[in-house]
Length: 175
Ligand code: GDP
Ligand code: MG
Image (tube, rainbow, N blue to C red; front, side, top):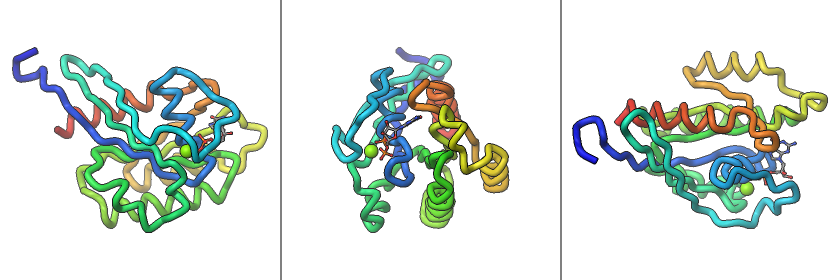
């Protein structure tokens, strides 16, 4: 420890998106390296930490998972206050979840911190046969709004580590 590039960073990370899009599964995949198939979406600890090393710095994520509060939209500003990073998630098999993700992004852009690192995530990429949202649609929206875009699967682990490393890198650059 020591030296000007060895700063340790602590960053609050929130996940926003409709119920059932895979927020909890994504956190579990990232933190525990596992996928729990029949997870009750309202059960589970609401807070996790995970440390990633980026160059000589470490980024400690304080991850706030919702425990079903996404049903109560009025609680959202309390939830994302002070966040360094927001992951906005939709489920590729549910068009309505994509519409909802766009609303979250609009809300964060209006009310959020201009330095907030925001990423759009299309989850359940393994369910391609049930796809309702084309990858180009998600990408286009992300590009138009200056966001990074990932298609992920919490089930197969596709792009999960890549997603969190990218966020850590951007959080480290921003601080
Ligand atoms: P949350 O309400 O956003 O926290 O969503 P959950 O993590 O509870 O996931 C909702 C349901 O989708 C659960 O049955 C998960 O097992 C399932 N799920 C989550 N991610 C994926 C994924 O990437 N692929 C598939 N096939 N199912 C997923
Ligand atoms: Mg959940």
